[in-house]
Image (tube, rainbow, N blue to C red; front, side):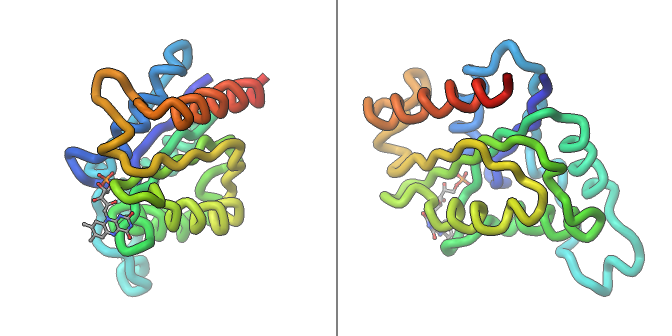
Length: 176
Ligand SMILES: Cc1cc2nc3c(=O)[nH]c(=O)nc-3n(C[C@H](O)[C@H](O)[C@H](O)COP(=O)(O)O)c2cc1C
C-alpha cells in the first residue's frame, strides 16, 4: 500500500508536518510519499491564467494522489481557513479534475497552537472534501500543539495520544 502524505502548509517549521511525520511512523510498513507544498508553488489561481494552461505542479500533485492508495494529511489554519499555499494547489487541481482526491481513503488531521486545534479547517475539510472525491475514514485534531507535542516523545497528553492511536488502529482496519 502506498501513502501520499502532506501538511497543508508551506512553513519550513510546519507543526502540521510534524504531526503527519509522527503518524507516518505508525505506517512504517507502507510505502510513503511525504511531499512539501513548497515544491508545488504555482501562480495564484485565476480564471484568466488557466486559459493559458495549467502548471505542471498541479498535474504532479494529482498524479501523486492517483498513484497512492491512501492519503494522510494535516491541514493548517490561517484566519479560520486553509492556508493560501494549500488552497492555491486545491484550486488549480480542482480545475483539472474536480475529483481531486480520487476516492482515496483519507486520514485527515489538523493542529494549531490554539485550543481549537485547527477545528475550522477540519470542519471546512469535512464539509467540502467529500465533494472532491475524499473518503474521510478517520479524523483527528490536536489542540495546543506546543503544550501537547514533544519532538522526541510525540503526543504527551495521554487522552489525545490514546485517541490518535485508536484512530490509527481503526484506519488500518478499514484498509483490510
Ligand atoms: C495569518 C495567520 C492566521 C492564523 N489564523 C489562525 C486561526 O484562524 N486559527 C488557528 O488556530 N491558528 C491560526 N494561526 C496560527 C497557526 O495555526 C500557526 O501559525 C500554525 O503554526 C500553522 O500551522 P503550520 O505550522 O503547519 O503552518 C494563524 C497564523 C497566521 C500566520
